[in-house]
Image (cartoon, rainbow, N blue to C red; front, top):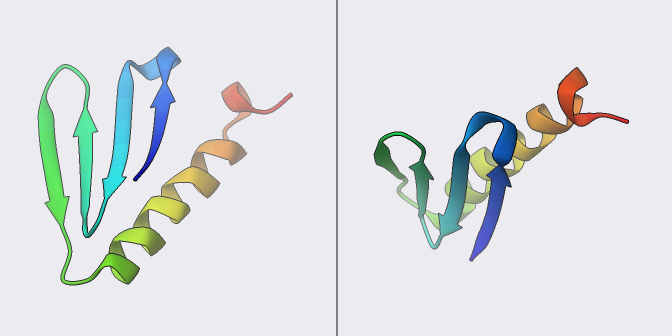
Length: 57
């Protein structure tokens, strides 16, 4: 399991097996056909968050 919490946005994103769970004011899950696809999407999200000016130093 991998997780990221984005306090500024009130989001918690968790990768568990082939599912990405997103919690904020609401909760929803993205279910993928494989763990590899879910991992790629999760890593892409991490990469995008790191490029936002709010998260760079």
